[in-house]
Length: 273
Ligand SMILES: Nc1ncnc2c1ncn2[C@@H]1O[C@H](COP(=O)(O)OP(=O)(O)O)[C@@H](O)[C@H]1O
Ligand SMILES: [Mg+2]
Image 1 (tube, protein in one colour):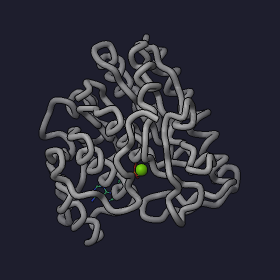
Image 2: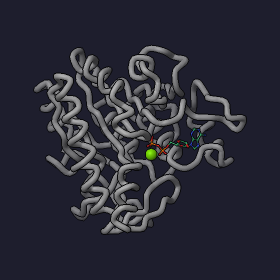
Image 3: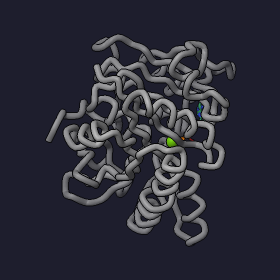
C-alpha cells in the first residue's frame, strides 16, 4: 500500500486553511501528497455574482453549462492557483491540475444532475510521475465524461477515486464540522457502511455529508485505506487526523468488508489507462 497521503480540503475559505497548508508543507517533506480541493462556497459566490442560478440534489450540485463554466473557472482558475501559490510560498513544489489534465481522472456522467460526473478510473502513471518528481499534486475536481465532455466532480468523490487508484494508505477529508454526528448530535468516532446507510436513510446524514461518507466508504472498501472525516479548523488538524484516533470520524473497515456503495458513488477505479 502506498505511503501517499490524499487530502481533501473543503468547506471553508482558503484564508481559514493557512494552518493546514503549513502542515501539508511539513508532511510533503516526508512523503508524497495529493491535495484535492473543493470550492463549493467560492463557486456559489461567483454564481451569485454572475447571476447564474443553481441548486443541490442529495448534496451534489445540479450543473448546467452556465454553472459548469463558472465552476470550472473558479475551481481550476481561482482556487487551484491560490492553493498552488500558497504552497509555493511555503517552499513546496506544487503543481496544479484537474482531472482533465493528462486524462488524470476517468469519469462517467451521473444521471439527472446535468454536467456532473463521478470518478471510475485514474491514470496512475501520470500522477505517480508527478509525485516521484517531488511535486505536491493539487487537483481540481473536474473530469471528462465518457463522451469527452468536461464535467464537475464532487471533490470528495475525486479524492476517494485518487486514493483508491493509488492504493493510498490514508485519505483525509477535511470539512467544516468535527465529524459525522448521530441523531443526538454526538460526534461519532468511527463509522461503518451499514451504520452510515441507516443514518442516511433516517435523514441524520444529509446534504454534502452524504457524498462525503459514501466516498470515504468506497475508498476504504476498494483499497483498505483509512479514511478520516474531520474539521480543518483545528490548529493541528492534519497531524491529529493522521495520528489521533479520537479526532474526527474514522472509517477503517478492513478490505472487502464494506458493501459496495449505492449510486452515485464511483466504481473501483481501473489502475492505469
Ligand atoms: N450527520 C451529519 N454530521 C455532520 N455533518 C452533517 C451531517 N449531515 C449533514 N451534514 C452537513 O455536511 C456538511 C459538510 O459537507 P459539505 O457542505 O459538502 O462541505 P465540504 O465543502 O467539506 O464538502 C456539514 O457542514 C454539515 O452541515
Ligand atoms: Mg461537499
